[in-house]
Structures are given as structure tokens and as C-alpha cells.
Image (cartoon, rainbow, N blue to C red; front, side):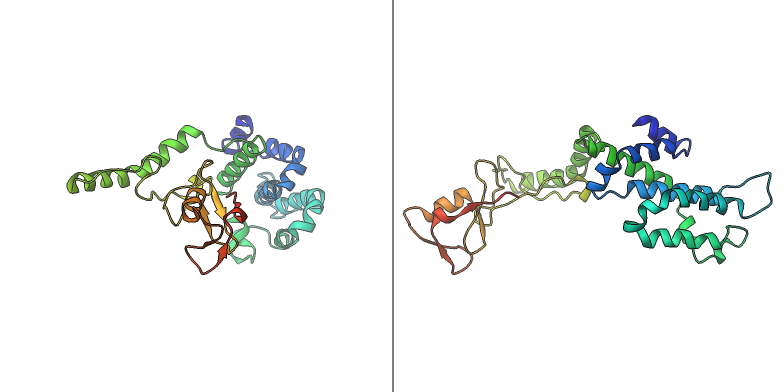
Length: 245
């Protein structure tokens, strides 16, 4: 992986990444990944914008891109027809001094394309191995750093009000994290306000509302039928089903 990443980031060499993507094409397709096409598109753009110092012709790059497109793009036509059509249309407007005059100039102005390709490759490579694309230590330290100001403020409030932290298995405040740090759905019982666990999982009532198992058992104790705490619906406690979130 690091050999391919070094080629992408430091050498702007797409060949190792393209070879890897072709080798794992089926697995990537099953995941709905765009990596293989994105690498091919970047290679097309690289050829299109390449300059031959021995030639004064503006068409050297587009002709090289055309040969590459004839070889590679037929395999992407079904899924990426619109994108391929745009790339092929750009061949009629060679990049020169008046690059902005081309209706396809936006295809060639992405200054972060190589870094995006590197990031996408890392994610897909690790995903196929069942590994996270970033280290667990980095994730834990970064998430802790984001949450620290909130917990520090809570600590000051508790000290000022002489309160106490009574929660054992949960934080007393929300600590919002970016989407990249959210890996699992979390269920919080609307009755007890406690987070669900394997021992206290969410249970679906016939009416569609979900309670934690302990709340369900407490609400239904001694009853053959119970009323939902949130609607007029009634059901037998034994009919509740465990929900996997």
C-alpha cells in the first residue's frame, strides 16, 4: 500500500494504483467504489495535459489521451456514460493559452486531484482488508481532543454548582463528533434515557415505538397487555421483538 501511495503522492505515477484497481476490479465494483474509474479519468487528464517539449503541436496530449480512452473507457461506459462523454468531448478543445475558452475547462482545474486519489485509494485498500483507513490511536486521540472542551466545561459547572456525575456507563452531555468519527448507531431509550447495550437491547413494540428491554419489563410488570408510553397502542409484552441497530 505504501509503495503505491508513494508513487501517487510523490511521483504522480498512476500505474501501480491502476494495476491494483484492475486486479481488484470485481471486489471494488461489489462495494460500489468509483476508484478504478477515477484513476482512469485522472490518467486521461494527465495524458491530455502532458507537454512534449520536442513538439509545437497542441494536439500531442489530446491524441495520447484519445488512444488511452479507446483502450480503457469502453469498460466504463455502462456505469459512467455521462462522465466518459464529457471527457471525450473535451478532445475537441486542446488545452492551450485559451484553456478557459473550453466548455470542459472545469475537468482540468482540480488542484487536489492527486491527494483525493491517494485518499480514495487508502480507504478502498483498507476496506478490502477489513481495516480502518486511519489508525485506531489517531481516531481515539482526535475524538478525545474534540470532546475535551465540552467535558472540561461540564467539570467546571459541576464544581460551581456542587453537583455530581451520577452516570456510570455514559457521558452526562452530548459530545458531537464529525461524520468521519461516527462508526456505530447508538440507541437511547426514550423512557429511561439510557443507552442500549447487549444486556439491555432495544425492543420494538407492535405500534412501532422502541424501548429498552429493562424499560419494557418495568412498564409491563404484572400485566398481560400494556399500553405504549408514547401512543394509545396496546400490545402483549411477549410480542415485542429485539431490534438490531
